[in-house]
Length: 177
Length: 177
DNA sequence: GACCTCCATTAACAAATGATAAAATCGAAT
DNA sequence: ATTCGATTTTATCATTTGTTAATGGAGGTC
Image (cartoon, rainbow over all chains, first blue to last red; front, side):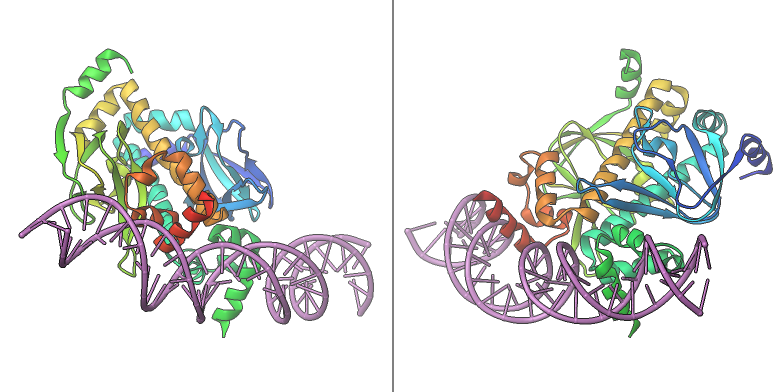
């Protein structure tokens, strides 16, 4: 992105801190911002019919949270987003960002790239869940998120992998020998 | 959408027929169209490391195939799309559609809605794969795609559900009694 | 009608994963 | 250092799902 486009964007950003454990976007609540994750680790998650939290995606430093348009239905969030460590976010009003996208080709391309990445990560994960064993999914997780296994709760990882944390523990000791 | 916007769109559409079994978008090939499924049933699928076809999404009559931007990377398709029955498609060049989106608010909203729906179907499926048993996933499939179970191959359904077709058969007889 | 091919079902056994409970480990707070 | 609480590991057994192979059925072709 050119310096000029970048400046236009950065001028509208506001930085906010979120403490560890806090859920800063809640399902069925309004939240109309786009977020850039400057520091820390976050996840998106949902509660399944059994009342368990299911991790959908992890976000690490210097990345972008799921865009407003993909996590929102009729102005209400369809997902929860939680800080798993102390976190710094930069945010911009989603409407303002959409205006930027419409009038600025570079920012539009950037926004579309974010969307594509979001989708293709989901496709990758979908294929993994549909066609790999739990052990293979763990290995894939380790490749996609190096180090994360030692930074966040195994319960959160297990629900991401679609297994229980007990199974995760078994696979870990299996892979360790 | 207003009649005027609709007309602008429809004027650019071309109808094409695809025969049963034909894969009309191929991974790693160029395809720069947006598609409307007028008649028939399609699926998107991929080949996993073991060489098996994995169904990702099914599309039924009067719906919209995954948008160009979400199924394409560096101008090459990342997915295969196949007609599971004799199919009629209406298509428009993706670039032309993007132009329409930029200059026409209604069409832009329409396009964004398609994107959101695409994502939220994936999220639903992700949650299912990560937190439901195979039997529950089959029930969810039946709700989402009524009748489809009797119209397409069970092998295609099984890979969508993340199980073998033998397991699918077991679950079917289990649920039948 | 006989044959063939493809697909779905069933069976028997093996492997993977879940459920429950108990033990071990780790870190935070005092 | 000690205690407390939460997380992770280990163990045992039950259930689900996979693998391989055999059986059955529907539709197409000759």
